[in-house]
Image 1 (cartoon, rainbow, N blue to C red):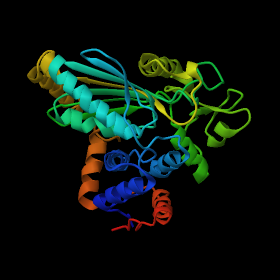
Image 2: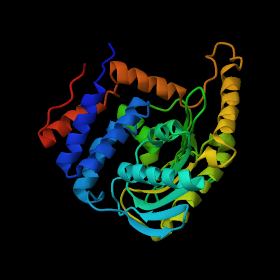
Image 3: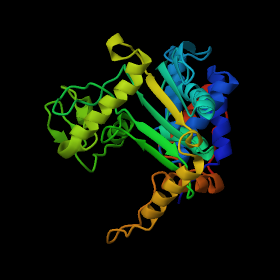
Image 4: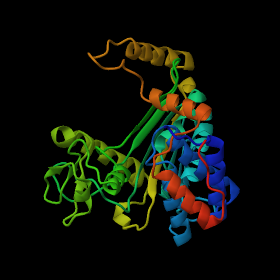
Length: 350
């Protein structure tokens, strides 16, 4: 039987846990809502599964619970913030809002954030921007962590480095959230905890041999995640991973060369307003043409019809809002432990 949880109940529990842990109401709401969006959209390694690690980071001081970001530099269309290890979902939501303001006036707005804490599922930030008729580009890296080797190498250099984007079409939003590695740190840890191998050789062991075994990542010598494209075409993912490093830590002016510690992120938020380029009507005509071309494209034998990126996530989200969200089996026990820790009522399934 499919077990579902009420969305409103999960949201309130997460807010209460964040508040009990020491976050002010605005930061608690941002963290809770962004993490929950990850589960609603199917990114469940980056949803409420992160609530306990976030609150552990807050307790240890790795995440700061109070304060404001510092403005490092500003132009009419771009700002750089020092996030001071404040909660990532709160910082990125603020950055998206500011970038939208700038885009509405100038056509584009960009916010670069250094020393941000982890920001959750990047796809969670896209729908409101697309609903406003604008385009979001969002990317991040963790300059204190390495898990992916350069193409042809065997030593960890950078993180999976996701790149997300969102934009409107007449058929609904396009939502992209793609890591520049074949899998993520979170999924590798989950596979290891569940005693499962990957279906494909998405890792290298410490000697540079392709493997499906997640345990290779923690072996000695340590394994690495393969760049997007794997053994056959990983040079493409490696190049994109380097691009993300340049767009995040390099633009923000703080990264791996500074030897940072702890859990965090360098972030770039960019919003583009089609109204200030070729015009909103022309933008929607073009994105509508492409949506129609995708939907009318003949499917491969035995396969479902093509769909736009994000369509499945939005359908899953709509179903969860109506019927309740299906959580990964490992999440409810973790929420129950948080309930005991903060003397709260654990969310019950429907």
